[in-house]
Amino acid sequence: MNVSVLSPEKDPMGLAIADFHQSGRANLLRVFSSQFDEDEMPVSQLFRTESQMPAIERKALEMACGSILDVGAGSGCHSLALQQAGKEVLAIDISPRSVEVMQHRGVRQACLTNLFDERFCGSFDTVLMLMNGSGIVGRLENLPLFFRRMKQLLRPDGCILMDSSDLRYLFEEEDGSFSIDLAAGYYGEVDFQMQYGSMKGEPFDWLYIDFQTLSYYAAENGFCAELVMEGDHYDYLARLSLRG
Ligand code: SAH
Image 1 (tube, rainbow, N blue to C red):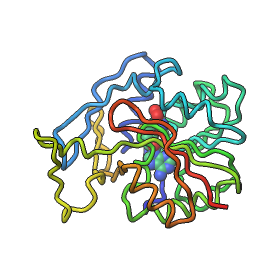
Image 2 (image 1 turned 180 degrees about the horizontal axis):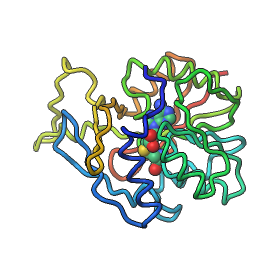
Image 3 (image 1 turned 90 degrees about the vertical axis):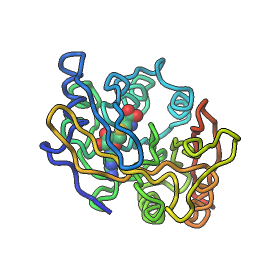
Image 4 (image 1 turned 120 degrees about the vertical axis):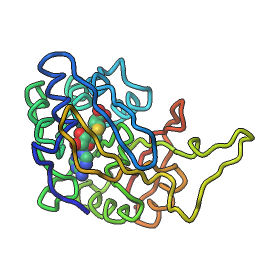
């Protein structure tokens, strides 16, 4: 598992976020994957306000309490909304430019660190992972390490609020059956690479996980998973807490 932060020369999303922050607009943030066709990510979406957020994200903000850790905070949209609600939040990200932008936008505690870097420690009531937040775990095989980190960072009665999507709809046939190649590994394990202008980042793994698989891994690693809310497109919000 990579525990480092991004170099400023290989941080296309951070550059896009910095551009949008400075000028109110950004060029195309291109997304490549070996599994999908080229796509683009609308940079303005990373600056969504609370009222522009999907219902599952608003629900997560409402549930977040105590000392909150916003993991992979990006432009800081969730951290800012939490601060406005009078809540205490620490935002972390591996993108140097994103952390700078968060500080400029008024996120009071924003820190350049990788969630998996054991030098980063703390004690939180809520760990927030939003916008397919499970992605940061990368692959199914990293889940035991992820839950171990969560045990280090969570207070005994704390919880993780994480959203994800079940990608099985991508494999749905016209007759409603699914053509999933089981030998190819778990269908939610995706690789991405981003490009902004001429800046290209390194490829990275991103995990989309269905709720049932998440619950199974949670139970194996001492956590209990609760389905809080389903979104309108195979997405959902889960609450993961330590089993007593
Ligand atoms: N949560 C934000 C941004 C989502 S994009 C939003 O909803 O708008 C995912 C973010 O996670 C990126 O900013 C990326 O730099 C960050 N990230 C990826 N891996 C990380 C890790 N291991 N630790 C901390 N941040 C990470």
